[in-house]
Length: 141
Image (tube, rainbow, N blue to C red; front, side, top):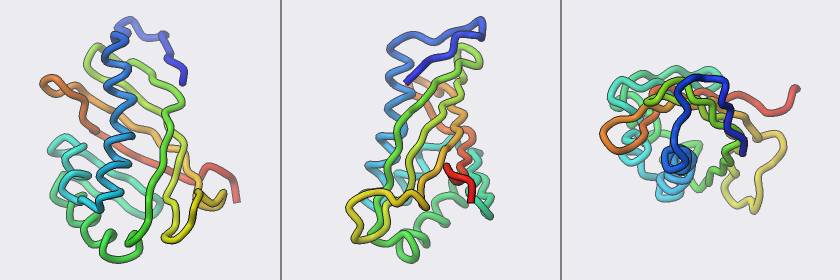
C-alpha cells in the first residue's frame, strides 16, 4: 500500500493504520451478514454507490444490505486490500482498494467479480467512518 503526500495535511502512521483497518471491518461485518454493523461503518448521511445502485444514509444502506444478505449476497464473502491512502486534510482521506464479492461456495474471487473501490473516510471522534463508498469493475469488459 502506498501513501500519497501531495496534500499539506498528511495523517499520522497511527491514523494510516486505522484507515487501512476499515476494509477489514467491512470484511468482518460481511462475513457475519451483519447489516447493522455494515451500515455503522458509514457516517449518518454516508453514501454508497455500486454499479446501478445509489443509497444515502445509514438507514438506506442498512435496509439494502439486510435484503441483499438474505438474497443475492446470501452465503457470499467479500475481500479487499488497501492500495493507496491519499490524505485530503487532517480529518479526511481517500482510500483506494481492490477486492470483490466471493460467490457462495467459491474458494476465491473470480476475475469477473473483481472491483476497485474509492472510499472517502472522515475522522469522527476517535475513529474513521465512511462518508462515500463507490466501486466498479476492476477489468474492462
